[in-house]
Length: 275
Image (cartoon, rainbow, N blue to C red):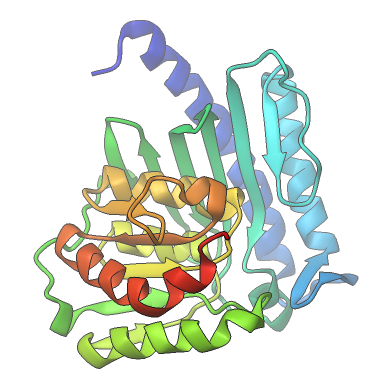
């Protein structure tokens, strides 16, 4: 249980985080499928004027309330917080390619961390009006109702999700080999294009497992806490808790997680291991 001081801190962080995701969500809802100016950041990597507008809205809320906190956001360099224990990890619009095409799988992801320990996570689906939230040690919820992973699911009836290595296609062969092994045993597979929502869906039992290589901290910080607080397991491709550092994530209920890790270890994990 949290002490009184920690509880007050989390409560205030939650209040500000709710304001921040709501501000970005309103912008996304009003501009879905109308991205305005689109700029290439790299191969299969885009930023729109809506991404930037969402980020400005979130940062304004955070900096107005916690000017000394650090902020790690997808579209900006790390800001402030040299003396602060707390860092906000922000993806103002997860699923930019979906947004550009009007494909309705987009989200806003905000997490607050102390070092590498995520304390608070919010993921908003502004198109469905769904707010997923988790507090470390206090569970996970969707629109105020508790959620849990589907921990009785078997591999044979599991619905999995993944993300393709579209920015690192030299890993495509081992990725496809691992995906084939998984699909051979699982019920079915989805690729929706928002890692934050995929993780939120694992947390609430809509999906039974998720894996993706090469993600960034803002893609997985909030979703990883959601899965863990909903009773699931989150590791990197080697079974270690280093997914925020290396970006290779596996998230699932216990009995599904072991299966995913085993299949990935045959082909994909060796190809990604440094050195």
